[in-house]
Amino acid sequence: MPVPITGVDVAAFRVPTPEPEADGTATWGATTLVVVHVRAADRTGLGWSYADPAAAGLVARTLAPVVVGRDVMDVPALNEAMRRELRNVGLPGIGATAVSALDIGLWDLKARCCELPLVSLLGRAAPDVPVYGSGGFTSETGGRLREDVIGWVEHDGIPRVKIKIGESWGAAVDRDLARAAIARQAAGDEAELYVDANGGYRPGQARRVEAALRDLGVSWFEEPVSSDDLAGMAAVRAASRADVAAGEYCWTLPSVAHLLDAGAVDCLQADVTRCGGITVWREAAALAVGHGLQISAHGAPQLSAHVAACVPNARHIEWFADHVRIESLLFDGVLRPSHGSLRPDLERPGHGLTLRTGDAQRYEI
Ligand SMILES: [Mg+2]
Image (cartoon, rainbow, N blue to C red; front, side, top):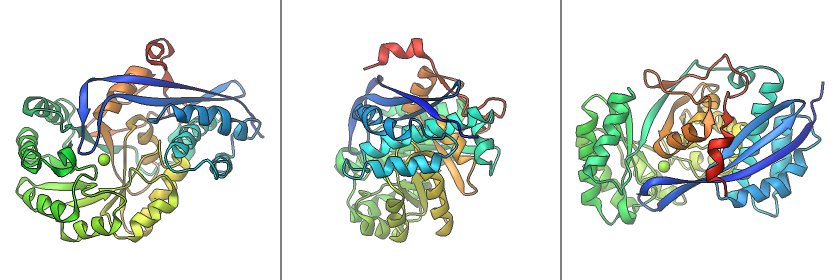
């Protein structure tokens, strides 16, 4: 029986970081997120994206009219209709974040209407998915970096950690290598150590950095060069012992295909709050299967857990410090890692999360 969508509400929030943060190619002092509620019958679905507040206007003015009145059972049709609606606006970037937030809210709403956990609606491929601790900003001095790494490995029991390198667009390689050495020491010999340059190096420089990191056993080199430079990334990959990973800026399924066809990565990354939501994230995972690769969920761990558990080739979920803090602050029902993995709760309908309206209010913009 059709369940017509009756309304969409959207709000934007800005949550300051405890101190200024930086990676190889950006600095920030706050994180903004756009939160969408979708209603049908007497149920409400929740989705969000870490996006510019401009995405909220796009949801309210342009995308809500596309979905209101339509059947929430038909999420892929609604996703397609939303993406078509943005033809002249531009889907990549802000458009894709708006579609993603709404798509996630629609899947959550459908699951709640069916009184099913989201993972049961989608169909589980695994009961849980490993996470890796992520943060270790280039702005952090040795003490703070050590605290981050020890927090993940010893306090949270996560045997995989990732730090940022590529400081100042690759202008501080000595400091990058020194910080990686601090992270290795803090993580111990057993934990996997990952680095993320956020596109800060040029290809030759990235190959030399990767060679210099081999003694530390670095096994994951994320965005060694700009994700716009697919040939450069493929060249780094060919020379690397570490797995090369990228995909956080894939806003559409064809952009995932281009990355994979270029032979640029050993592991695909995709962000459920950017790529087009749960609908497109699952398609991205399938494209990776077709290339013999795994997929790693970028950002938004509380949303990623549910979709990553429903594909057969999920490698892990990014337990990203900023998003972990914000999601605990703003939402009830958050999952915590156990034995280094996240396990969606089968006792609650949808993804099981609700906005803590009172606590969120002070961050609303
Ligand atoms: Mg990254």
